[in-house]
Amino acid sequence: MSYVKNDSGKSYHLQCTGDALETVKQHGKPTDITLFGSCFCPFVQRVWVTLEHLGIDYDYYEVDPYKKPAELLEVSPKGLVPALKLNNYNPPRALNESTVIIEFLEDLASSSTRRSLLPPISDPYARALIRLQADHVNRTLVPAFYRYLQAQEEEKQIQGAKDFVESLGGLLQLFERAGKESVSTVGLWTEGELGLADVMAGPWIFRATNVLVHYRGFSLPEGVKFRAYVERLVSHPTFKKTCSTEDLYLDSYERYAYNRPNTSQVANAINSGRALP
Image 1: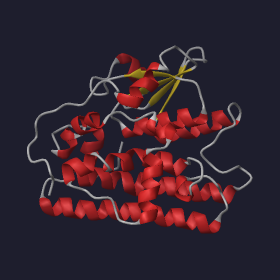
Image 2: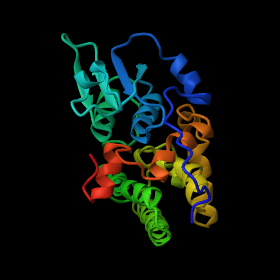
Image 3: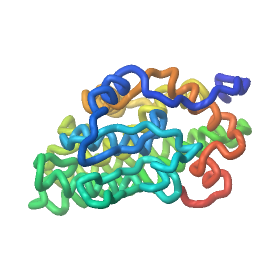
């Protein structure tokens, strides 16, 4: 059962708060890369963390993805965030879809900042193991999060909680496998450096500690190792730089928690059983 019983009609925020706002202020000048983002969007956050970790310069442009300004539609045909505008081309070029953007930034960093979210290319198997983790996040963990949050009947909420916990368990199994089958120092599970799977899963694990707790009475799975991992993730300096204050998430996700009509393209996809957009 959810802790919050009544939909108060709160709307999504249009400006970052807390640490994230301070980061936005540091990235207000035009650069070669413009990140079109929305302060509450987890898909944006994974790209934002990537930019910060890889040390790639960018400017942040907050948009309202539900009003879809012309500037956003120019770089993202569906009007979805995140999107990148690549200003060093004439005319400027663009990319959308968070996983594609992250891969692009990885390639860009390989010849510029020399930083990465993956083990070195000389260890292709270790890189593949981390990509398996990221694939699990996209296919299983992210949809399970939304199904759980949007479920309205108690029975579906109970099942949603089980499915979400199971998706977390699957990710941890992949973490453990990588620990046994590689000697990579990438990944917070093994107390290494921030890795691709951490960035891919982090925004939803973070929201499980506030949004799911508030609206579904959720408790993170027990286990010293898992709890320590979550703490390392949400307190990681790079990740924290992209996090707003809790009220922003609680307000912005109320519409998901009560499954309001046309909450988002993601919500509509979950309701209809389609793949996420």
